[in-house]
Image (cartoon, rainbow, N blue to C red; front, side, top):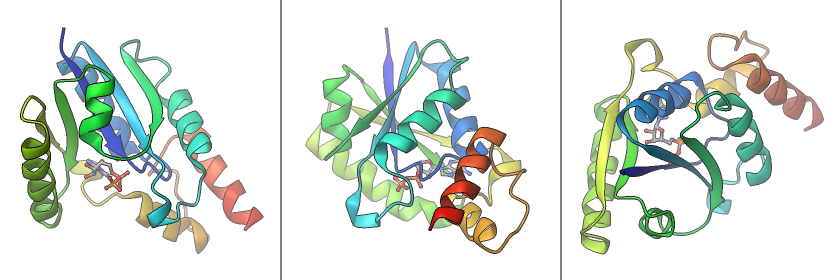
Length: 160
Ligand code: ADP
């Protein structure tokens, strides 16, 4: 039984994240999505909101769980009995940072491997940051995330 964790900020999740999660759910027996508290990045949504948004979006994937976490991804992996950390790669720009993180994590936890899933081409440009920027300026974000997420984002922006 191979468990994989997929750590990230998910502020909020996009179709790019959901694509990685659904593909990972086919590759691994169990996938635990880890939503990082990450106060350093001052997220738009609270960690509870980001977890609830993701839970709703992946509710049909029976081997996927969503949890909040704080601290190191390798510790989150160990706490969940995971042998694998999943990360998504969009473009060359992601690569340098992701390689450094994967190598650091391997030093910290030689028993946990990082597996990269390359983005589906239609989502290669997509990030939570881009989606939030477009939403702030009144653009149509329906191609970036499912309705539950786009509605939550528009509501959050109106409240701010
Ligand atoms: P972090 O702050 O850890 O980068 P993100 O929520 O931005 O958190 O991203 C989590 C993971 O999802 C990262 O590995 C990132 O590269 C990946 N990811 C983000 N957007 C996409 C996308 N459009 N396609 C594939 N992977 C993506």
